[in-house]
Length: 228
Image 1 (spheres, rainbow, N blue to C red):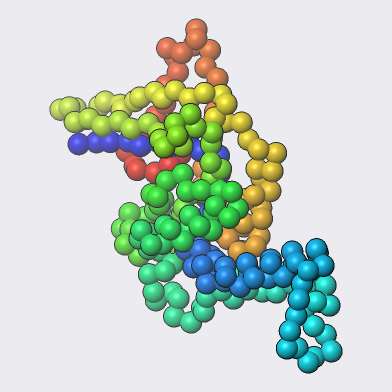
Image 2: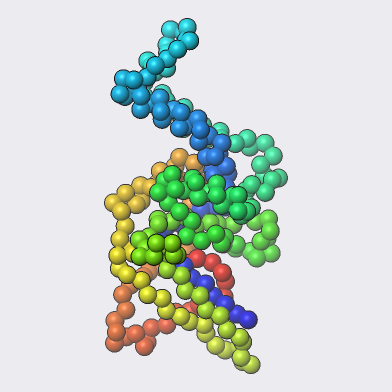
C-alpha cells in the first residue's frame, strides 16, 4: 500500500524541540503574565490599588516598560533547562503536548495545520531532536467544525511494475487564502519572543492553472506523510 498526504497552509516550519519547550514555558508562565497584564491595565486606568508595601517604589509607580521587561524575562526562563534534553519534552508529540502548543499558538492567533512532524532521517523518528513542526494562520473555512485547511489524500496498491503515480485534486475558495494585515507580524512576534528556530525547509509556488494547459500540468507526489 502506498499513500500520500498534502496540506495547504500559510505558515512556516520551526524545530519541534524549541516549539515544545516554548509551549511548556508558556503554560508555566501564563498565570504570572496574566497578572502582570492586569496590573498594566489597571495602572493605565488609574485603578491600581497596592496594599502592604513599605518600599519607596511601589508597583503603582513602576513604568509600564518595566512590567513588559519582566514578561520578556519570564518567557526566557519559563522552564528549567537542567535535564531538558534527556526528557521527552523536546521531541514528543503527545496529546498533552499538542494542547500546550495549541494554547501558545492561539495566543498569537496561529495554529497547528497538522500534528505530523517532518523527519529528515526516518531512522531517528522516535528521538529526533532535528524534527520540524509547521505553524500556520487559521485559514477561512465555510465548515463550522470541519477541517480548516485544504487536505488531499491518495492511496493505492503497487502494480507489478511499480510505475504509477498517485494524484488527486482538492478545491478551495480564493477567500480561504485572504491573509490578515498583521499576518507576518504574528509569526515574527512568536518567533522573536520565544527564540524559536525557524527553518526554510521547502520553497514552492502556487499559481492559477490555465484551462488550456491543465492537461499538461502534473504534480509529483512523494509517498511521505508531511504537510506541504
